[in-house]
Image (tube, rainbow, N blue to C red; front, top):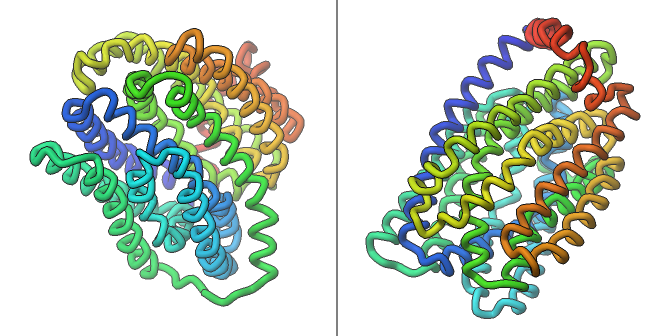
Amino acid sequence: MKLGDVFLKNILSKILGKVLDVIISLLTIAVLARYLKVEEFGIYSFVFAYVALFLPLADLGMTPILTRELSKDEILGYYFVGNATILRIFLVIFTLALIYVFSFLYKDKQPYIMLSSMFLLLYPLSTVNSIFQSQLRVWYLNFFTIFKKALFFINCYIVSKLKFSLVYIFGGYSLAEIVTTISLYFCARRFIKPVYKIDFEKIKFVLKESIPLFLVIIMGMIYTKIDTMMLMYLKTEKDVGLYNGALQLYNFLLFFPATISFIVFPVFSKLSKHTENFIKIIRFVLSTIFFLGVIITSLCFVFGKVAVLMLLSEKYLFSLSIFYILILGVPFLFTTIIYGNILTSLSQQKNMVYVSVISCIINILLNFVLIPRYSSKGAAIATVSTQVSIFLIYNFVVQKQTSFNFLKYLFSNNLWKYWGKDCQLFLEEEI
C-alpha cells in the first residue's frame, strides 16, 4: 500500500471534517461572543484554560505512545490499550481531586470549573482513539469530533435564545463530551476489543515511555494557558476576554498542523528505522509545513479585520492588534509540532522534556515582564517570542538525532531542488 494513497485519502477526509468542525466552532464563538458580555467571555475562557491545565494529568502522555505501539504491532497494542485504560481510571480520579482542591482559589468560579470537568469521569474510555489513528481511519474521529461540536453549538444556541446563565454552557460542554466518548468507544469495538487484563510489565513500559511526553505536554499546556491565567491575576476579566477573542481566531489556524501531524506521526513511527528515506520524508514535511505557515500568516494580515468583525463583533476590535501579533509565530509553531512528532517517533521524549522546561521558563518570565506593562498585547508578544525560541532549540535537538539541520536547509539553494523529489518519494513510499 503506497503512502501517497493512504495520505491523500486521509488528508482529504481530515480536511473535509475539519472544515465542518471549523464552521461549527466559528458559529459557536459567534453566538457566545454576541450573547456574553466581554467580562463573561473572559470567565468562559478562563474556566476552560484552568481545566485544560490539569488535563495532561489524566492522560500522562499515553495517547501518542499507544498510537506508536499500535502502528508497530497491532495485536500487542490491544493489550497496551487495555492496560492504559485501567491506568487512566486512577489518573482521572487524581486529576478531578486536584481540580477541586485548587478551584478554592477561585471560589466565585468554582461551580463552573467543576461542571466543565465532569466529562473526565468517562475519559478512560477515550484510549480507543489511538486505534483509529494508528489504522489511519481518521474519518471516524472526524465524524465524532463534528458530532461533539454540533451538540455543544446547539446547547450554546439554546442558552442564548432562552437567556440562560453560564452554568448551562459548561454543563452542555461536559454532556457533549460524555455522549461522544461513549459513542466512539462502542464504534471502536467493531474493529478491536482491547484486552482489559492487568499486566504490570506493560503498565511499566507505558509509564516509562509516556511520562517524559507527559512532562512535555504539561509544560506546553502551561506555556499556552499561563497567559490567560496571569492576565486574570494581574489585569481584569475584560483583558482576558479581549485576549481570548484574538486567541480563539488564532487557535483555528492550528487545524493545519494538527491535521498533517495526525496523519504523518504513524508514518514517522513506521519509517523511523529506515534512515535514508526517513530523513527525506521529514525534510519534505518540515519545509511544506513551514511555508504553509508563512502563507497563512500573510492571509491573516489581509483578512484579519473582516474575521474579527464577522465572528466576534465590534466589541472585540481591540483584539485585532493582538491577533496580528500572535500570527507572527504561526510558521514557527507549525514546524515545532512536526519536530515533536519526529522526536516521539524516535523515542526521544526525554529531549523534548528539556526543550519544554526551557520554553516554559522563557514564557513565564516574559509574561511577568510584559503583561504588567502591555497587558494583553504583552501576553501575545510573550507567546510569539516563546514559539521562536522553541523552534530554534528543537532544530538543534533534531539535528543531533537525525543529522538534518532544517534551519540551514531552509536558507540553502537545495530547498526547491529537493522538494519535488522528496514529495514524490513521500507519495510513493510503501507502508
